[in-house]
Length: 197
Image (cartoon, rainbow, N blue to C red; front, side):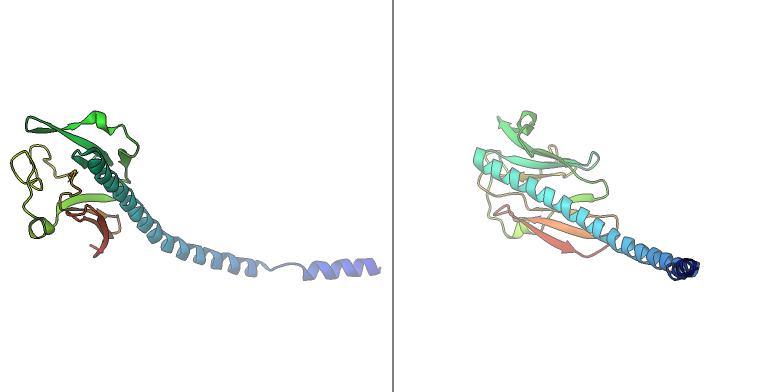
């Protein structure tokens, strides 16, 4: 008789009601929804900064190869294929071109997310800060050759440690933007947060 009384007491104490379980599930759903919304912005921001780091590495590679090999190198971006290349430029008898066989070194090619849009533009430093230096191919080495670079999707790095005065602007789907500004005198990159569009 006592055994039956103990088993009924424990079964009444050990359970949760259906209402209590529903309240807990609703609270978990609300907290999950808030966390997912917060993490979406974090993911977009990390994606944008990751693409920025990859471009910074490619810029450093182009700079170091141009100085080390005493040859003009360039970073070329293909926005349609979401790829970028570090290439060496060859010039013979005043004609400049690209040596595709010089893309076989590590880090010479990379891809970036199609969720990040890329734009390259000249900066104001090109006319204000640079000395009047010219290459052997008549004309300033900072002038853009429209025949060789019709879309403006390249940045050139020169053997004397200088570069074209350009910046790479990266924008994510949320409108957040960063700029990779290349110092034309030192060819170093400075990452700048831009206003949201």
